[in-house]
Image (cartoon, rainbow, N blue to C red; front, top):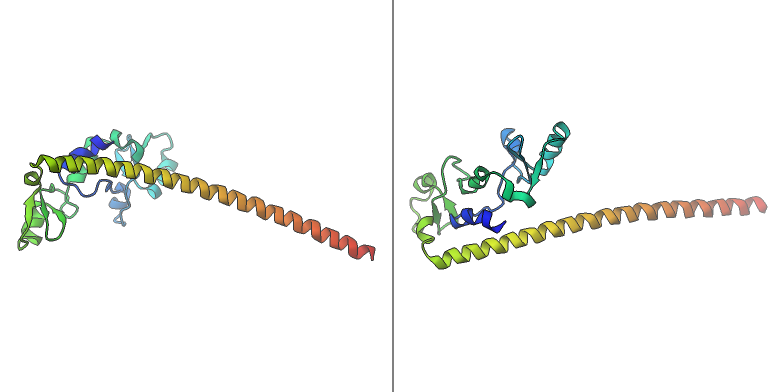
Length: 189
């Protein structure tokens, strides 16, 4: 998985997992990060929208972020797009604002900034490339660990909820037994 992001990292993308849900975008909603890609629809879906998609198209093959290497290259190239100017490619980095920028951003918003550098110039330093590669591998590893921890947490929550329901049923049964015993004692007196 690290090699798939290497090209976008080496070109200076700061949003490794910043894939936006197509449905949210199309409906002018706050776009959630995409967690699934449908090969047949050629669209990205967040966890909320994928439920509706699956209801309508339950036979479509979905790829989760665990299989991001199988997502189409054009989607990965979206990481290199400017978030503000969708048709522009990220070409620079404003050190004053710690922000990746495109040419349009530079002209309109960062013209007076003193420390704007081209990403390509920064990447000529081979040590920096190695650092980016190492960072990419670290981020990918941490992302996998977070996904595993999230899955473990959800599994634990399900287990706790099942235990809670079981204990609640046992308490109800015990209470009924106690009430029945008390009723029996009252009748005997």
